[in-house]
Amino acid sequence: MTDSIYKKACVIGDPIKHSRSPLIHNYWLQKYGISGEYSKEHILPSNLKQWFLQFAEQGYAGFNVTLPHKEIAYQLVECADDTAKAVGAVNTVWIENGIIHGGNTDVYGYLANLDAVLPHWEKQTSHAVIMGAGGAARGIVYGFIKRGIKKITVVNRTLEKADSLAKAFSSPLSQSTKVNASPWDDLNVILASADLLVNTTSLGMTGSAPLEIDLKCLHSAAIVSDIVYSPLETDLLRQARLCNLQTVSGLGMLLHQAVPGFEKWFGVRPEVDADLYTMIVADLNR
Ligand code: NAP
Image (cartoon, rainbow, N blue to C red; front, side):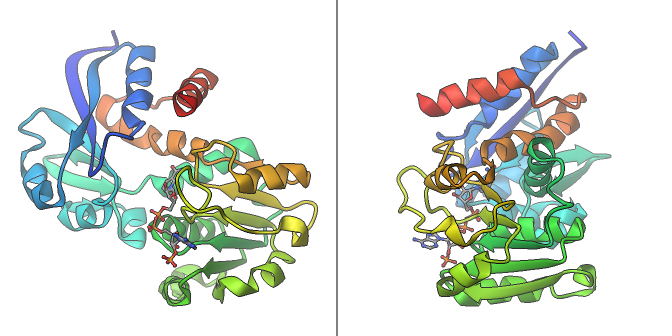
């Protein structure tokens, strides 16, 4: 054991049954010989404020936040990191010097996964096209701006949401990046100049409607990434693979976003290794 003090963390959400976070964190607790546990807590929106007042008394070092609490959690933390401020959502909470801190590690998770799978992605990406304009898209726009991507186009079913997302990032922060919004019907035209295409809609997820798209307009060096991870290979990624395009699946984002929280609560920076990946894939296929 690297630490004799028993430490606890958890994930909160409503619903929470589906969460794979306990599998990830308990794998690392075991791997690094840390005395502790990571559990699931079903917290209703009406109990969220109370939870923030009580989690430390219940012995938790901190917790992850999943749907539908990420935006309210941002309001409830005493100190938010820059990413959480930019995205307006918190997915990781910890205590530092008696103060409740909140961060958003989804952005880190998405970028760390891209870096791990395709280390050259940044060099070959001038134009990134993001399908969807929800919470995940917001984080990825912010991440691309931080990485200096020159042009980002947000394409969404509801154009107003894409517009408002693009406007939110048309600030001094994004001086070297141009963020545009486009209607879904223009997708084929936009794809012709895309170097990186990202799906952040829930389309293509098990139990959701399919994502109907034709990737023939993409150039041959384009990268296709999906943040949906169930199924592991979505129809989008399958089509991209059959077109010989480079693909990045959504599971890596889920695994990498867990790293900073584990380090905050348990004091060890964990590695996203092949055994963890295999274990979660087996669980997804169950
Ligand atoms: P969200 O805020 O609810 O946004 C959902 C997006 O999907 C919106 O842009 C919405 O468009 C679009 N959409 C939903 N149904 C659609 C339909 N039938 N046709 C066209 N567009 C549709 O959700 P989110 O938090 O951004 O999450 C989006 C997806 O990413 C989810 O599947 C989630 O599981 C996944 N995700 C994965 C990870 C990971 O670690 N891999 C992390 C976060 C999220 P409108 O604006 O028109 O409604």
